[in-house]
Image 1 (cartoon, rainbow, N blue to C red):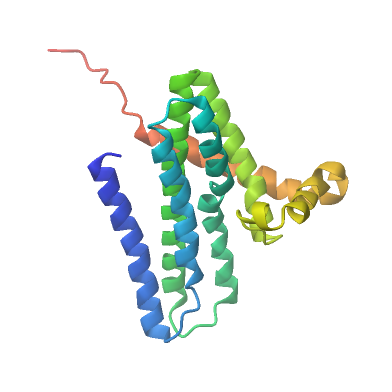
Image 2 (cartoon, rainbow, N blue to C red):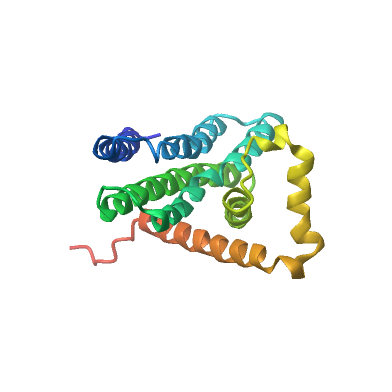
Length: 216
């Protein structure tokens, strides 16, 4: 990771922690302490993808990719923490909670996109450009479903080890009876599409346009 990106990541994470610490100080309680945990979970796929970038053997890469895909939805999941604004009852201004929640959400999403970009580069190098983009689209679409499982059914990434049978039952229900789970597919399609568009905008901002001016 380039040093400037690392410093920007550290600065962004520090900003989130500073806002949360300010809220702790003003309110005298730790209502939003779970945001730190959510931010930590968003950092896990970035750490995994940085390790993946150094691996060439497919047999070693597959387990890492599985872990990455399992934890990747935690990054966009933080966007849904904005729902907590509906329950605002604190003595601090509502705008402070808005700025804090937006900071955590956007920083987590940005970190998630960095990890996705690294995974995309890995597939592009080892397979093809189109394979890399297929992985991007599929990962973001699956994240829409993963965020639904986390926000509305309250499943966690590690529940695949703790309660695999119950988790797979909840995963299977929308597929076995899609007509009675329109809200599931509505959220998955809507949130997944939002993530795909956001990633495309993010990628376009990273692309430096060619200088079309005539020389001389």
